[in-house]
Image (tube, rainbow, N blue to C red):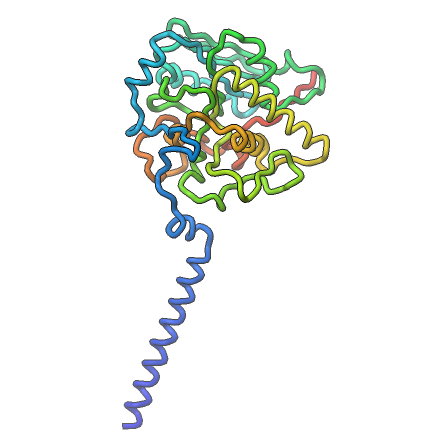
Length: 325
């Protein structure tokens, strides 16, 4: 009888220890930020910003209304990208797929920044479409650095008054679906594919209060990628000038935002809310096999692994510098 009682006690003790261990593992998992983000703090699909700006999803956008608002060939759209150094290998695919999908009913000019070391391959273009190559070697004086926002502002926006709207996009991307006038508005931001389904506390806003990119814990509702943004020419002039000015002031004070241009862009969007928000359909990372609510892909972003990290993956080419020999 004693042996039976001892065996029963041991079994009960093993069961208790097993349940205790399982409870500890579950608690530790629940404490992990990824687990919290993924299950307990997951937000619903964003369809509007708190300020009323629509989020463009394939199943919510009214394509016919967008076409009526922007009749065929009614606006001139600029698409700006940077293809320097190792990123140059992407320019052919970028332009080729853009011709297939980007603003098919409008007049388009592609502005490609290069370092002048290689010639951009010629591609057959549709009517009312052109490619403008901007050599940084020719436009920058010896040893003078220029940020991405400065380049866009001074070398494109100020020199091309004929542009109605402008989009800036990373060259390590390819168009795979519709990208038309449904994306056009006065100020356009794109939800970051890594954070659009998470809550505010997860957003990598600038936390250094000394930086001009700083976003207080009580500010901000959405986090935007630096890999795709746009708007009217006037709005883009203000955006690029403000972001460039803030970064220059930070540099003067020995400060820099952790996520560089993307940090200053998000600060700007906190102060000047986008009038239209593009869903992650417009920025689907190639190495992602799944993203919540994304059923239609328009742009594949961050091709392969040349980018080297989150900063360059979504906002590459933050600083340009040339040296004349």
